[in-house]
Each structure stands twice: as structure tokens, then as C-alpha cells.
Length: 325
Image (tube, rainbow, N blue to C red; front, side, top):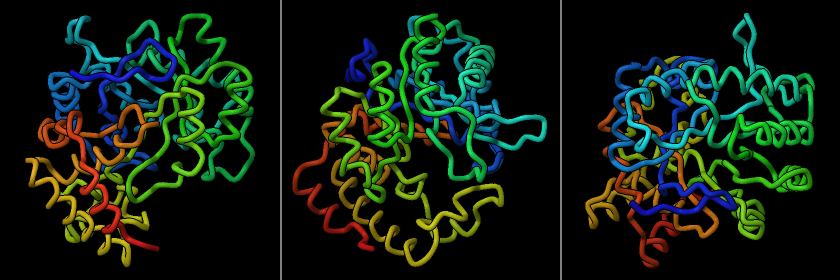
């Protein structure tokens, strides 16, 4: 299986990794109820189909996603176990309300909790989930600099092997790099969300920072399985119900784009979702794409993106079909 080196690390990852956001189940930014047995089957199918990394976070289901990941990997032989990536900065208390905290003391507590839930001795890639959080009105404890210094110390202690960031701006990356090298960045990126092309991706490429993008299929919208009826039937606890891309007038334009992706994919025996993922992987700064799956069949529908490349005429066709604001 083809792999790519993640920035300056010794990690060589497959172009697609398994994303464990949705399998966390219901929480403020959840995807509605999930079946843990199907989630375990999805992760194991991803590994059996060649994906060699899993990305999760404590906030996904308030610890539940990490626990499901541990359950899925428990019986996989050590020689076949994928890398496990997780995050810090979103915490909760007895009230189960998620809050943002990038203070050193909080991150040190978080890493111990993640090690316990994941049942590992060290985390392969530990990432600051958010440098700041718009969902929180009051100022967050700590700072990007304090958080990064803490991660550098955790790496020195051997609790985490590599340290990365998620949702960082170029300024945040510069702050972190002044303290210690940034292994990777995890930003949102899809053909419907391209802001990072302007400055973030060039900065990462210039500084040899690996990039693993999330939501390459725009949270399921570009999979080819999403319909207007299915959007209307999303569970009450599914955060996508309130996302502008799933609402008119954008929804109709986005579904029309999917039909273009479908036509391109059919020429190669690929799904629209695989075309959408391959589109993100075409960028020279992108190392890999995080792709969620809630069942083994969903994994089978996207795994082909790992070795699929779009031609220049196909990229031009997609560019012409993109919705314009």
C-alpha cells in the first residue's frame, strides 16, 4: 500500500485514514445515535483494507469514540495495528458541557485520560484540537504557546510520539514552531471549503509540516448517498441539520455538483465520495485525508480513493461545476 511521510516525522501514512468523529455518538456536535458494533466493524474493515491510521478525539462522544477505537483495535495483532491519533483542548465536567482549555495542567490531565481510554502506552500523534473555540463566550484558560510547550514536554516524557495541531492559523503555527517543531496540521478542506489554500497550505509546504485534512466529503454531503430527503430526515442530534451547506439555497447547488462527481467516478468505477477525497489529495501540501465511516460498507465505498488520481481535464471539469457564492 502506498504511504506518504507525515512532515518531518518517521510516520508513513496511507493517503486515507479512518476518522472516528461520527462513531462517538450523541453530543453537542454529534451525528446522532451510533451502533458501537457497527463502528467496531467499520474500523476493522478500514484496517483490513489497508488504512494504517485512525484519528479520534476525547470530545467525540465525551470519551466514547476513544473507547470504541480501543475496543476495535484490541484483537488486531501488533504488526497490523494502525497508528492512533487523538487530540486535546476540549474538556467537560460533571455537567457534560464541553469547554475549551489549553492550559498545561488541563492538557496533562487529558493525555492521561486518553492513554487510559485508548489502552496504549503512548499516543502516536497528539494534536491541539482547537487553538480557541468560538462556541465559548468566556476566555479559555491557557494559550497556544502554553499548550504547545506542554505538548513538547509530553513528547519528551514519551507519553506522545509526535505532536501536531488542528484548526491552527498561520500565526498559530508560527507561535508553535518557535517553541518546538510542528509535525502536522489537521484543517478542514473540501472542494466546498477551500480557505486554507490561500496561506495555510503554502506555509505547511514551505515548513515541511504534514497536512491531514478533515471533512474531505463535506461531512457526507459529497458521498453520493446524500439526498434532499435524507437531509430532511437527519436525526435531531445531528449537527449537520444546522449547517448552511445542508440548507437551501446551497443544498441544491451542492447536490448538482455531486452529479458531476458521479459522472467522473463512473468512468473509473469510483464513487462520488472517492472523487471528492481524491480532489483533496491532489494538492501537493496534503499528506492524507481523514474519512469517517459508521459501517464496513461505508468504508468499502471510500477506500478506493487511496490510489485514485484525477486527470487535469477532470479537475477542470470539477472546477467549472463548483457552486459560486
